[in-house]
Length: 205
Ligand code: ADP
Image (cartoon, rainbow, N blue to C red):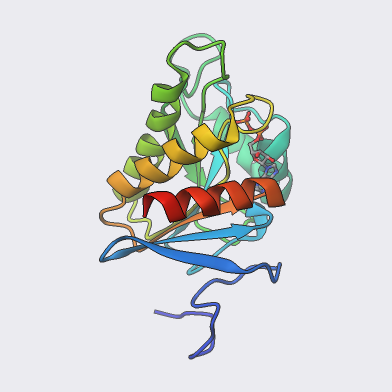
């Protein structure tokens, strides 16, 4: 299988536009955790077995934050694909904590996995819902033979989840459900998020 990186590259197989450092950990003997600061829309490792995760909303018709960035970079075909995902009830294509998959169109990955994290405080079970968003994204990834997956910090934008608590749920859940994947990446959009994820990985792994 074609891999982009030259042999001996210290960046391993990671190919992305930024030159931000990548911190590596092991979730299990066969699955690595990689943390980097950056823009998830330019992330890819292998292309054909890659997926990025979108912090979407239940309607799945785009939005602000990482959702808007992913739709802009993927092109209008992504919205058309999202519209084809059946509604489970009025205006709900992906209930909170669940995940749906579409092609990634103009993005350098094969799939976008759309998940919906909880709005912090407005959901008394927001920790369970955040865990489910990670767990179900990984389940859908494995069902589609994804080997490399990148997550943003789900619910850490307009959904206001506290970063430290979100990082503990994120890293512990991907550790628990990493079997079958080669690498799980977090692409964090700010220094603050990156530093918190790094500290939590050092604590938990
Ligand atoms: P949510 O509604 O789940 O809170 P947001 O999109 O508001 O989703 O925020 C989720 C996280 O994604 C935030 O930490 C935000 O800073 C981050 N983010 C926004 N744009 C990008 C991007 N292009 N790549 C990676 N992360 C991003």
